Structure formats: structure tokens, C-alpha cells
Image (cartoon, rainbow, N blue to C red):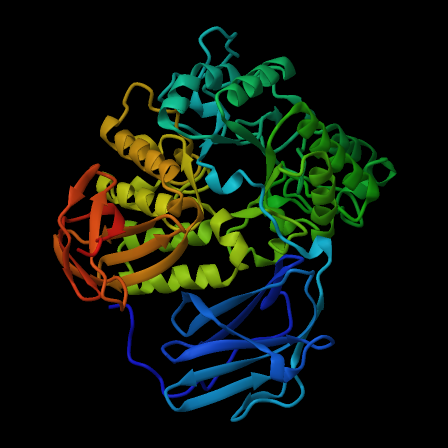
Length: 593
């Protein structure tokens, strides 16, 4: 059971008049959050009224719903919905449990309803509202490291290429290019993905291309502008959107701007583009600011207007070429006021363009509606890695980490978080799991069924291995495919696409103990139960579905077959779940005879 013993009274309430706790879904919808100590129990209500058109006696009482729990707190929310734009609200909180009752206002915790000192919300402006691109929560993202994915057959090979399949280093090249991506289009369509995220493709001397020379030119190793447009058109014709990697925090050592600085020092027209020392510029080791003290990537100074104009021009140019969005490298190291400006520019050109930020931690500051649409959710990866790959935590601790993760972000962002288990910057998941394909499949199941958007790092669908960078950037295993694992990925993609509850539905954790993790996804039309057994032995499971006298029938979406559901009042007894296995079950209430 996921429920535990109850505390007597809420000794701590967490709510403040800030964007952490009060934020709009639209001008007519307002989300209000409040948190109580875990296992407090009882019911929490939001008491709300308009200070000009209603009295406290005519207030509305909204029961708040728990949306997340972590090790110390349960997190609740309610949505206020009005016909007119919401303005001039007053509100407080009421907690009830049997004969016990308590209240929260701006003065603190009270034994009776407050008569003044209420919380207030004044109004919502258009730019206060966070909204995701409409297509994003339906996305299945596939990340390609272009130099290592596919080498086009009818392309001129650069000199000095390694043989495909040899060991990658930080310096060597294998010849992957845009033509190769085009020739792999049938493969991508068959897999079922509908969004590509490409690591940088702009001119650069390195294999990774994060040290940009010229943002307006495709790297000649990859192709030309015409070839990119051809690839983009082919993707769009096949229902695949394309997101490019925007590396604006820094530029390449070999860029004309930084080379001019090295030649002319403080007299360079680009001197104020960089963070330079007071004296002479030194490069070994560098005494100018750069990424990770890596001299090849000098950091850009966004307090300089010409830097901002340059990066805005780059962002606009490729959107006008036709890309569907930007993944923004190390965006939490860039001046946030630039991202606000960048967002305004992007959304003016294409309101449905995606802005995806890279951050390895809590990205809430970028998810207010004025910067990013979503972030790369490494917090998800950390939790899945610990629970599935390394087995350093049990299902209860995993549930706490997932609850904490969701509590970091506004409710309407949850379905858009990009859930990854690996990338070009991490060891491959199956390597971390000591080569266990079954664990990879469990992790993929969580990607495709938990709240958020799943991302496949190229080759994960074949259980490709690889230690951390550069080994995680091996060439795609075209001659050594794991077709069984691929079939699992294809099935998961198809299930996600065919079942709206997995894209749109709310989530409720039902069971988290030892190696068993079970949760529901519920939409207006569907209820889906997801079962995960991390452990190396089969388990008998008994999972509560609700407190009503309902009985359920079930269909395994993985096996495409009906399953026998043993029922008793309020409970589904799931029987035995095999070792390191999962199932995704479409539930239906039995009709009364």
C-alpha cells in the first residue's frame, strides 16, 4: 500500500503568494497550491471569493487534490475557473479531518476561519500564462548525434575517417551526415518517432560541433544548406518535426569573433563579446572565461547588445528556414533576460515552435512561461537510474523522487517535461545496468507511461552500450541490431500514440514498495494501470484501485490480450508479475448485471 499512518494535525503548511504557489493556466483559470506534512490525511479546501463582487459569506469551497508526494510533504492543488478573467480574489485554506479543523491565512495557522489578512490575487496578464506548443505532449523524440548516426552512401567522404564501428574518441571522425539521416528515414518512420532532436550541425572543427565557428552555415562534413532543407522537407513529409541544438552560451575558439580578439586584444571590435582578463590574453591555460575551463569554448557576454542581436538573428534565421524549435545548450548558464527576449522573438515567428532547455537539475526558474517550454528532465533520469539500473533505492524512494520532481514545476508543465534515460553527455543506460536488456526495457516503459514526453537517444532501441563521453557517442549499430529490444520500443511508441491517457491523463501512484511500482494514468475516456517489477524474482501483487465497490476488466496493451482480473471490493489482485517485467493494462469497469 502506498498510504501510510496518518499524522494527527497539520503542523506545517506551505503556501505563499508567489509563482511557486499561485499561477494562471489562462486568464480564466488559476492554479493554487498548498503543501502539508506527508500523511497528514484529512481533506484540504480552498475558500475563495471576489473581494468586489462577493462577500466572504458567499465564498466558494474547492476541494484540493493531491498531485505529488515526497519524503516530507504531500502537495495539493485546486483550479479556480471563471467565465470572466480572474481578478481581485481573496482566499484562505481550510483543513478538515473528522472533528478536527484548522485554517491558514497570511497570519498563519488558525483554529477558526480568518476574518481578515486573507491571501489575495489581483489579476492575470496575457504574458503571465504558460502554454506548451499544442503538438509537444504528443511527441516521441529521437536524439541524433549527426556525426555518428548514419553515413550517406552517395556522399564525398572527408579524409581521415575511422571505419564505422571503431572506438570513438574526442577527436576522431566517422562521416555521419545529413544524407545519412535522409537514407534512414524509412527506419525512423518504422520505429514510430515523430520528432528529431539533432546535436549541433553548424560549422565547427570538432566532431561534436559545440564549438561553433559560424551559426549561419551547415558544417561541410554534414552537407549544405540545400541538403539541410531537403532533409527538413523529407522529415515534414513523413510527419517528423525537427529541433536543432542552439549553442549560444559560448562560441568556438576558431570563430572569426574570437580569433579577432586573439589578434587585436582589447582593440578588437569583439572584445566586449567575451569575458577577458585585465592584462594579456593567455590560452594555455586560458585566462578568459570559457565552458568548463575548456579553451575551445569561450563564453559569450550577453550584457553586450551586439551579442544578443547576433544570437537573435541566428534563432530567427533557422526558424524561417523551417525548423520546429530549439534545444538550448546549458541554458541555465545564460542571462535569463536574453531567454525572455529570445522567446518573444521565437513565438512571434512561430507560436508553435518548441523551446527546450538543457539543465541537469531543477529547471523551475526557466518554466514560468517567459523562457522555456520544457527542459531536459535529468531528474527523471537520475531517479530511474537509481531505481532500475543501479538498484540503490527501492520503489518507495523512487516514488518520493518522482513526487519531488513534479512538485518543482507548475502543474501544466508536467506533461511536457522531456524524460530521458541517456544522452550524448551520459553513459548509456544499458551499460549502467551492466548490460541488462530487461532493465533497459523497464526504464523505457517508465519513459513512455509516466507524465512527460519520452526521448530515445539513438541506438537505445537496440540496447547500444557505451561509457560516458566520448564512448556514449559510438556509431549507430546498423549491422548489429537488437531486434527484440527494438520491438519493445515500437510497441511502447504505438501504445503511447493510441492511448490518450498516456499523453493527456493525470497520474496517481498506487503502490511503491520494494521493487514493485504501480500507477494509474487517467483521462476522460481511459484508465490505464502500469505495473513495474524491478526485482529479479517474480512477485505476487495486490493493488488498491479505489474505495468504491467497483470491479474491473483488463486488457494487456503489451500482449494485446485480455487478462484475468481477480477482484474484491476496492481492490484488484494482480496475481504474479514476472521478474524484471512490466505491463500496461487498459482497465474498464465491469457492467452491472
